[in-house]
Length: 349
Image (cartoon, rainbow, N blue to C red; front, side, top):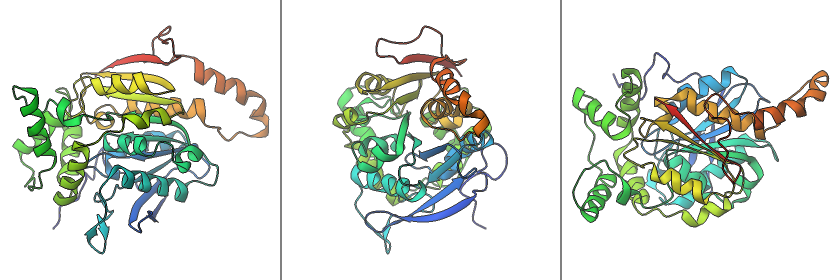
């Protein structure tokens, strides 16, 4: 019997979607898409990271749907139930392809002119950066969340392999990202390795085991191909075109994309709303602290998406929206706004 590609019980087990659909990207590759939550609810579209799948977002989806949001998640090409290419032949692996896929999902799952909060983790955040300036992102993105991601220089800044010498460390990380060797069976050693690479020291066994199951299910050849893309990634010039409200979320103990990447994003985004610092957490922040990440998405939706209201509620809608946008949350210290109108918030693990 084949082991499921995700856990099937507990908070990290994926909820059943309201709808599944295949969305054709620009080159014809069909992307696997899930839609959760009520039709007409404030929309959130999420792009997962390297070696992950729709299952990665399970606790975030469950939390947002419980509050009436409609959540769209999809498998990046070569991940989960999305193939790597047409008729088994991989098509172009590039940032532009990632952008094509996100734009196809936005057009297929949102009505013309409908807006959503669009969030991405790791390679999913890079997908959003790659789509900066695209007509579909301008039409559909009311606000963005960039989570545990970076715009450039990934191998040179990673601290997964503690080698002396910056150049040697960069070369080692490039080789690791592009390796197509199979991960092998899930063992206590592989669990410890995934935790070391992707998570903070305090993560619980449920989150760790869920992450291991997802990462081990990634097909090795697409994993290596996308790893090589990440090795040479430079999306810095794209940041100026992300001109909608954007929150940055990052763990302080991220070895794959260290916290310096969050600082770089915060310093270069035109409309930063929040730099949310998750103390002690690693790279898999949506699995390590799902409520903190869901809270950032909630705040963006409350501040930047129109929510359905009955006629009796219409007179209070404007005041409610203004309160959501200006009052600090429990994790945002009052008076934390920077000169640019954004805030730096810190949350303990």
